[in-house]
Image 1 (cartoon, rainbow, N blue to C red):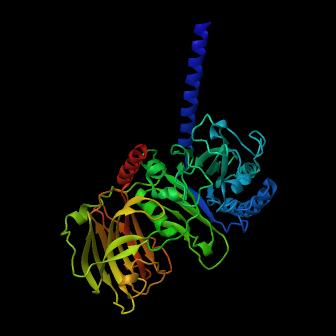
Image 2 (cartoon, rainbow, N blue to C red; image 1 turned 90 degrees about the vertical axis):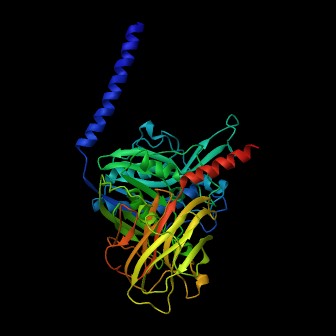
Length: 506
């Protein structure tokens, strides 16, 4: 009897292994070389006062208003051949709640391993009308849907980390496949400053799923500035495309949504689908479909109140260009600050070392701590009403989070007063004939940004060389706001966190 039981378990295990291999083979055989991606920038409807508690019925009424708008975008995307659509963070209910007032909007979201199609079996995990709606939209339109909703998980005193109200509340991304099946669930790790109504998971979650058009990973908004899970999904899990619901507040000159998200795609050599909230009053706009070599579609609109659907074709398995040595070129040069008159200025509360560009053409170097930044440029005409500087920052950023940066930047000052260098500016008139920017970076994680006047990208107008230069391929199509190499020193973050943990124990 024991022998038969062992044999049966062995056969069952072998059968499961065979089915996994068969699934992978089917995916590979039926794989698509390209796919059509869609992102929707959504003007979310939310209550005027999110700190006043409401009933579940009122919460559901509000969520259905947003879901009806999202349904229009999803249907339109599917009709245009999209295989997958990403919708924004907070798109279903808005933002700025308390723990109590967000609760009526939350549903229990199970682990995708339960093999569940909510559209077919809506009551299997309690009352889940939002998941049912999303599942049916995916199934009825034969499209993958990425959405951001809230998850709740009960806990008790046996868990020492259980919140006082007896539940964990998570900012959660879900993915439903084209049959309506829940295939991914991700709990946001790096919560933003005012997200204290949500909990972070105890450990970072690395969420991936396979399709016939590539391997996908997912994370949310503020996660992009940290190592886990963002970098690990690319480096260790080898995803082809990142899905990125966000509620991103633009911070110029270096952290506007389209600028930084397209730079991350290029720096990490992956496709990147970014869907942002549309709320110009809070500086929230900027969505895009980005390939490793260039943006394919993007949207930035501070003037209207309407949402926007973007679609574009992407390679399912993007080719990985040659590895970039981000310090090679600059290290071979004379890394000593050239010219007199360096001065200090602030970019998003970080103290940069700046050097004014006084000539129509030139080679400039500016250094700060271990970082030296080199710029070679030519301007069409030097204007008396605009000032540009070369800047370097090497240190700990502490504003909305604590993380180490190395940044080389060419940027336009807000006015001709040097004290305004580093402040937010959206328009410029100076045209560059060419530029080449490099630095002595101590990290391989550098994100190349080029932003033109009126906060526009420059697809196909610049390139990164294997020796670490960000250079123009032709004169930029518009006046330049900034050309930047934005470097992250994740290993220093780990040292900082380890030090903080040690201090907390003493």
